[in-house]
Image (cartoon, rainbow, N blue to C red; front, side, top):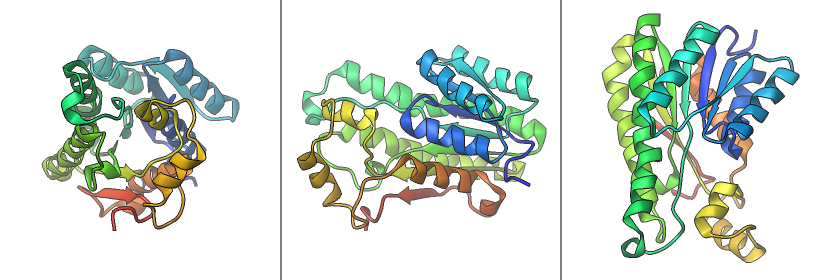
Length: 254
């Protein structure tokens, strides 16, 4: 029996590199997956890949900063699959790398709207369903920058620090309802997200070397690394783990 047989999951930012890996891994292990993304085409492509592989999935366009969108997402999961057992708040946004005092107010607001408000809204609408069902699991994608911030992305790191604090606080509030809440802190990966933050189309060898030099494991994170960590935290294998932010960082935080 697969770890997530009979379970339903929502993954936000499912069309992104990490989100896709998470959604596919959950489906491979038996979960029915609602693939939510602001980019309808990307989210739909992931859902189709799951269905083509014999799994159960559907996609939905969601702006995680909009309460009506997030509420509709949760309601759709319950309507389509009968429950929401796992919520992965993975959608994220980063401003371009620059000194904090040179960042626009618009960019600052955009980062906190997606990274912080998006997590708040996902939890706000999912938790009541999980309480009614007798339990559930929430996994939030934070960042190793929440633990060891680096210059150039200070507001982004601060937003991920807020995600870690929300994770810990909510875990204490809902533990009596058999709901676990954890987070993952990935280190840098070669994703469109990272390229956007750096303002480049491709990470050149020098940029990669500079990033990898600070990671004792000697490489960037891979999407599979993050998906494995999320699925572990979402599974019964992690039944005694809640309020934790798991560093998926190859030792960068040492």
